[in-house]
Length: 131
Image (cartoon, rainbow, N blue to C red; front, side, top):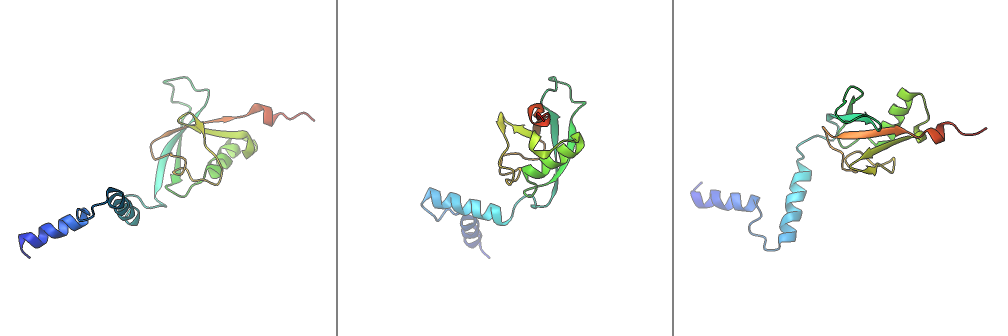
């Protein structure tokens, strides 16, 4: 293999022969999805922190292991509800200032990745319904 053929192969891998920048970006995205850096079921860790935790206090943090790209918001809510002995519908998850929903979405669909902090709280109004 001579230097010209090697250079041509490298340029083909970078999609330099494609003039349209959008098509080049789509090809890059296709390659990344075809060979992801993390497997969808790879165990990952994030921190679950109570919503009322004081800044700098991480003693109440829960290290939560989940399956990257597979664990849904509803599954996390159900596990937190079980820990708090309440109904899953009373638990809310918040990340980056917005509530994580719908429950069928995965954490990665909501923009949550390994090492992130997700805040949670129990809505007391839903727990203590009048009889």
